[in-house]
Length: 498
Image (cartoon, rainbow, N blue to C red):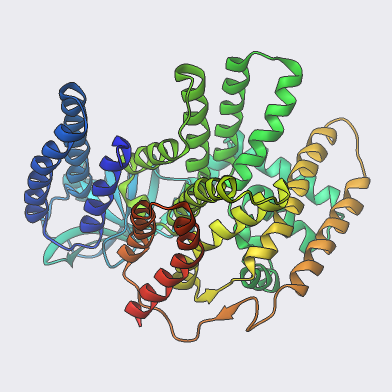
């Protein structure tokens, strides 16, 4: 495994797990970091040239120092003990803290009332609701809440709870992207003639707005293993990329201009859907992939994936603990590994299968193997039927997304009623297929005994597949391994959690 990005990424993730799970105190983690650097120096010196080794070690030291700084909250626990009181503070909300028992965010106090002016420019732990903060991080707001001193992890910290953000609606109303989102919702509502289920489905599939889905819809999509269609992910980014690349290449054949325009469109789309981890991963991966082809004339899918993962974790190490992040990277890694090896096996054994059917089955099976442990742990369900269902559902989703973009573009000029009938037909076909292929005890199994897996198991599940896959030399053995070992690992790790 001479991939330098992967060699750096894996230990970096392990240290993030140490910090997030509070396995050791920070001083012990620093000692482990020093030992790790010495060991890595020997490994790099063996694998790479001296110059490359020096650059990689320097980069890794900077990376790990950044990690230590990230988990040093720099909150002054020795500030004057304050009684509970309701105040309004101007806060710069930094980021979420995942490894504390409560739902805290790091925030810097920009201004404070006269009675608490000693808090100005201090860092505090702020209690905010998840649905409020997703679009507020790295911005300053006036927040009203209860200021108090609280004992956390054997230290007293200044906390701010029961928060109400006072100027969030005013700010949102001035946001051009928010206005664009509202316009899209309005056009969708016009096109589907106020049909609630269809409206909620289209909003979910194009904007990732799952809150509009009914409980019946959520249950059906979860049991069929197609709920991922409504979390804006690599699938959606890939569709958007292909649609706009086709449209832009009609206007210009200049590759640099095309990729630049598409990158800008993808950034706007990311802002529109509030930057979900899977969509960020897909955007980074596509841009890295295209840059490597344009400037270096070569491509490496796994390296592009690892680099996108590393960039996200440098900016926000806590992203590792998010369900969307874990699902995104485990699924795509599985698809890359399985696709590479099964394609080789296909060449060796001359397996003649229709290209579209073969690739569809391969991607769907790979995605199932990559996601099954996470879906079992987080959602208490096992959905083998998703392998077949997704082969049918994903093409319908692609037609839906193309049609929605076409409708949005044409609705600027004319009002078209045709789309209502077309959307209704597609939705009814999808709903009928899901009802056929969603059978309890056959295509899905609801888990009654709640699993209790440590979050590090999710990471080691994928690493186990990667490493054991490398140990198998014969192509036939690798093919058998990829077909049966993922299920074996799934059973092993679930038994550990019982």
